[in-house]
Length: 426
Image 1 (tube, rainbow, N blue to C red):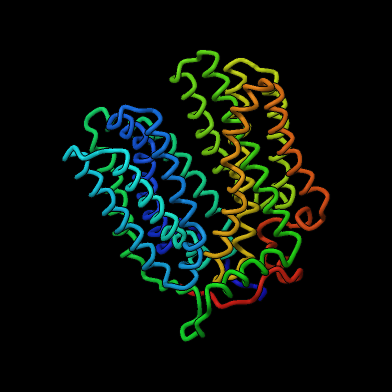
Image 2 (image 1 turned 60 degrees about the vertical axis):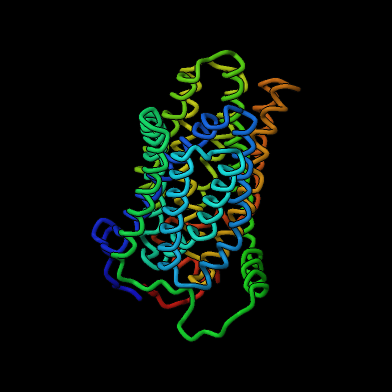
């Protein structure tokens, strides 16, 4: 409809601010807990091997919960699932604190708690992001995605120092901070006024098998969705592989951990800067170009890093990598969220994460084997090649290249048959 008034900015949208506050508090607690938990495990067990085993079990918990979590968020009221996520997260941290205080920490107990925490996070936490399209109008989705990127970068920058300081005071302080973050998320969610049903009230029940088949069919029904998925997979494997190869290479050269940690701070700061720039870029540069160009820059960075530059140049390369990431996510993820029906946000998001993140565990393995067998240059060029392949996928197919700027998404999606008309709810 022409002449419709522009939606209020995010900062004047109370429901969004409550949603954001809940996610921010949960992220702060999770960030501190995620940084400190491997160190807590090592302090309790005294074994690097046991610490790695617990981390493996923790990762399996995330994998097991991913697809069922998508199904849950498309079947049940999403605000209630978010409340349950915060409540169960707080309970897990209470148990962890009691285990540590009582001296009952062991590989088995810590692995069980790590598995449970990551399982409940992916099983129930998916509902929070699935709510976003029901809270934010289409025109503001790119900005909301960019805010999420900036929030995560800021949390990442601070969680290490804060988590380390808390751990220095007491072994139970990091899980206590994690506990408080979950409780804060619960309180913020309770203040939300909307109802976030994934389906219309009174809709006929469906079978799990049919729900998964519907989501898969929707994802593969048009080439642009497969292109975006291939691009995301290339970025996750290629960029993470580059970062891990640099980390291992510097460690092998005897560079102190504190200096290596500075690079992570540079990366997080660059992502934060990119998050501020991304909304303006998405509104002025066609989404197709904005999704592809930063990946090409990342591939060039990978080639540059293969020449083993000094720390200052590596920091500059990290800055280039970080600045481009929010633009990729704000454009491609924002557009994907826009064209995904409300009733399928959970399933499609879970399937997309499963595929796009499925290759990411290969990054450290390939980096380690590559450095050992072929050396730094060949390893970096392999990951640069992965990123280059993602660029080719974006360039060779016309579908992604033709996506316009964010203000034209709604018209474009309707003309191309990429989205269905559906009433907003919330």
